[in-house]
Image (cartoon, rainbow, N blue to C red; front, side):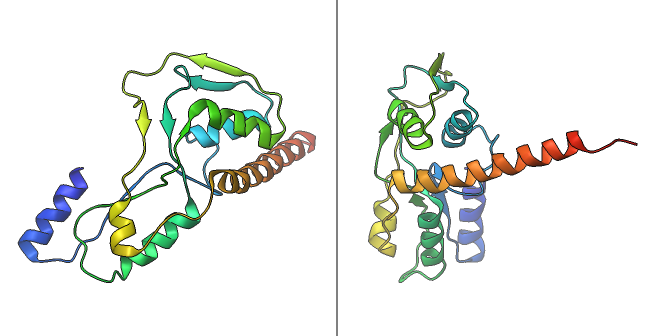
Length: 178
């Protein structure tokens, strides 16, 4: 919010053209396995055969936007059909419960992970779904990649990453030390 305020001040004072987005729950390859986001947490826990940690009763909802859809909108925003100075929300209209996401993770990874429930943090929102109408109206943008397809690409990425990490770790343990 501070950065947005500074952008608008520069726009008003110096007449600079500004464009900015608000990004909601992006997923896809290149996520960090320990970034503490629900998608990476669930996939990594599943692939490691660990219990899936769910905060709250799992009824809270989120929407997830695949990274390719996000990048497409960034490109459109750089060369919009008309001036846009208001924030553009980027995300997906598909809304899923945390429980549904955990079940999808288990199904798609073939894991036998169990669900482990912990208290919901006080500041955790019950619902998080963006209003992407400005992106739709001004840029003609709508996300195209389904949750299942984006999830699958993310699973493949994490599976490869974790396999490579395990292989490097095994090589280090097997190499002679000076």
